[in-house]
Length: 174
Image (cartoon, rainbow, N blue to C red; front, side, top):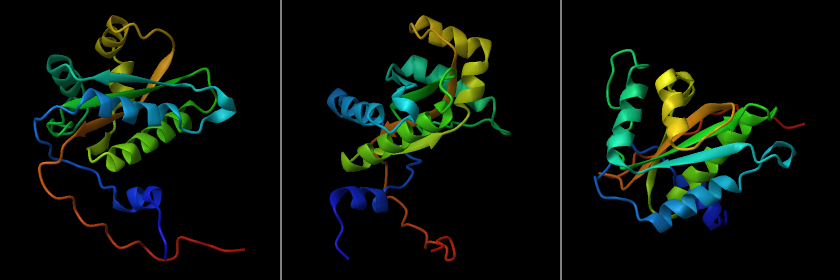
């Protein structure tokens, strides 16, 4: 079966849960973000916004907030040097889907560019909190946004896991 580069990125992408401390070059982060901005979206509203966090102190603060929603705490960002926070504008009826598609596009772009990524949940809880809202306000993010997800980026500190076999019985034909 013939595959192209996009299909290869889809088939080979895996969530990375261990990162080297090396910074991801800004030009790569910019390309990943651009891929997110070009994601399909409802009614062409382009409702998601993306907050890039490479400042270690701010990244650590957001990670600490995120960890408070884990049953046993922890380090949910796995040591990744960059976080792309996707927020959805609640005035768009499709904001959750739009933000999810943006994260999906960014994960595939990261894979194609040789960067590891992992979608980290709990952005909704973090940015619904007063401290999370203060962080957004300090960055100039104004409006009624909901956290959709955090995408951590960095260079993997090891080989990715192999894909699990795909479960049967998930495709139906009419």
